[in-house]
Length: 172
Image 1 (spheres, rainbow, N blue to C red):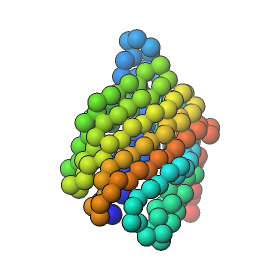
Image 2 (image 1 turned 180 degrees about the vertical axis):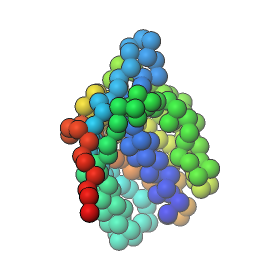
Image 3 (image 1 turned 90 degrees about the horizontal axis):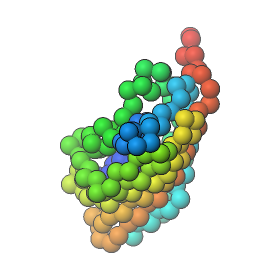
Image 4 (image 1 turned 90 degrees about the vertical axis):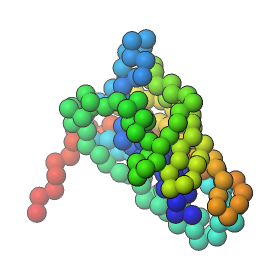
């Protein structure tokens, strides 16, 4: 199950890593996030895994809730270098990869679909949503087979909002 959850988290990692440039910038111009502090909230909309013990499902729900409220500071330099197409090409890391059948990232919209593999497990993934200078809202759907048999589906909604200038690091 741990391997599966790693693959299922790919969408979250890709989304949190930054949605920035439009892949078709010439047609619609790049949509860039504003530099500063961003707060990301994660909502587990649907989580169905046949045969998963209730305790494991509760643990997954708590893990997702724990990712909510995460603050990240993005400098102007980081924002200028953001390129979601390049991030998607990298895949999930740790030897994993994604093959995208659809990568439409333009005009403030995200519409991505493909298959990702990590740790010997393959899932179908879609990411649909919007990206603006001060807000990103993406729904990530992951579907696949579980090692114990049956089909699983996980739907997460990730919303990131610009909350102002970067917060000064705490001093001790």
